[in-house]
Length: 346
Image 1 (cartoon, rainbow, N blue to C red):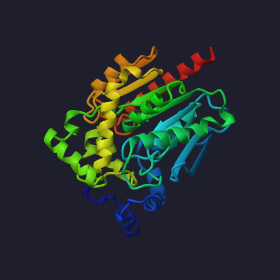
Image 2: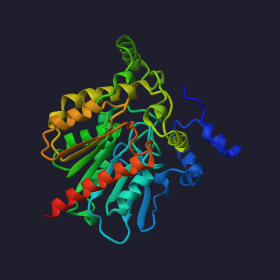
Image 3: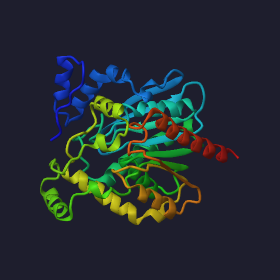
């Protein structure tokens, strides 16, 4: 099991909230409200990006499966967006916390940004960290973002998928379900294959798969310190603890199995990817395999594709690197988007 979270200089009342079992969304929402002001004040470059001039909205919407989904949007306040960007977050993550800064930066650059927490993650309803079916999760994403795209206020605007880690896999599966629905995709360290050190030995894997069919929600998958593996900047490793609603416990068996199956499927289907692509990966990533991002770049049938490999960078390119690297990656994303929107107009 994961160690209890410890944050410096917080009250006993806040520590009690932090120690609460966050399996259900109600407790995660309570924790987020209690820590929101503290999170906004942490010394992370993304949290310092201004929000003046933006229209920011949060809501809860019940989807067709009867699940309450948390959504958030960031839009330029005084102008029509150049395009819409739809974010798919990583495993254990939320579209709040440091992504707030990423979204603000994109919105200040003229883009409308839309995000959601998957069922079982962040502020959305569901057992924390549990994915019963990644296909259903992808359908949830398709359904939520289709509602945004159907809004007549956004008629005719280009629409881009933006996926990070697990979200990269989700974005690719959304595209494969809707091959003609998207203008392009930005994939940051996409989960197309885990590195070998992330997968248990063969015999242990077989045992875990067998147990998963009996106890799918059990947390016994071998667990490594993800933040240490994913964050290169030591100060930002410490700040990651302030993401109080992130799932940081041992992976649930069925969730791990669904993720593994998805990477195996995507490895087989790289040639089917046909939309414009920007693929970004850290050269020293030990979570998702950079060589498979390169293979995606080489095998995708897209005529418009770009692959950037960042020297010495780890998995969390947009949260765990130096300030300079984070803004370089953000700059590369905005440059790519600007060029695609310009080409659309011509």
